[in-house]
Length: 296
Ligand SMILES: Nc1nc2c(ncn2[C@@H]2O[C@H](COP(=O)(O)OP(=O)(O)OP(=O)(O)O)[C@@H](O)[C@H]2O)c(=O)[nH]1
Ligand SMILES: [Mg+2]
Image (cartoon, rainbow, N blue to C red):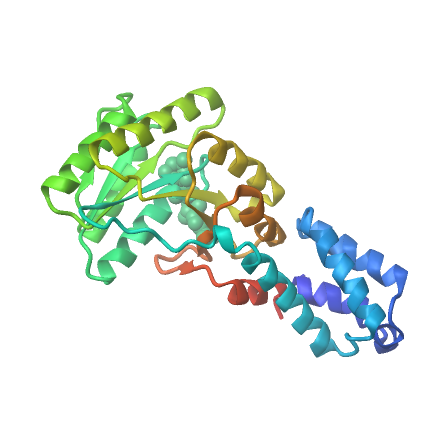
């Protein structure tokens, strides 16, 4: 059931509850709903403010309650201005976008969708498959390349992914490409290897092209709730993360975790995946996200 409907059922079973002000049973029930939606630590900030508003008698109608919730959620995304840097493009030469994240988070899908988005904006794009580890990984990106009519730099299976990244930057410079998108491996069972490998990729890219990668986007699966926060910390502890992409926000009951991602990882949410289609990657808009999270 949509989050708003659940909250409404608790807070507005009896309109008198809101008018009366603070009702502890009601507050406890709302808190439980927020925890179930995986708001995590943000739950307590929300509850504190809700209680304050109710005490003041500011939330007397359904519309006021909804408007307060939306404003609170938007405020949480916009409060940390330091993390709200815009997408970085290279001043000169190719803009290198590195995609990071665990298996199945949606990196390859995001690579293709981002590529299409840049193509639409009239930019030239090159894809690089720096996942030499998993069988079929490079082929998967190559298929996207074919569909989009884009070249894809690949390497030998089991080869050094950093070498693929290096070759790709080289090719992007030589061909005067606007945007290079580098897809990486997501296995996490060998966390130390993953970290070392990612650090090497970042180092090698930077050596070939000063200032690159311009964007290191961490792709997180929005359906895993607070686990995404934990994953995010592992990656952001390993390499500088400039932005987040939260996928699979269609049909998740755990979207609440997104509220804490930005704050906990210290990087802005750049894009959200909201479906299976090619166009289902949207610019992150706090207001639209809050409305979507609450539902009707
Ligand atoms: N419903 C939905 N599915 C998505 C979304 N984004 C990605 N997916 C699906 O998630 C699955 C995994 O996506 P991939 O792009 O292959 O994930 P990956 O991170 O590249 O995975 P590895 O290469 O194994 O590390 C695919 O079936 C995608 O179609 C989204 O926003 N919504
Ligand atoms: Mg992949």
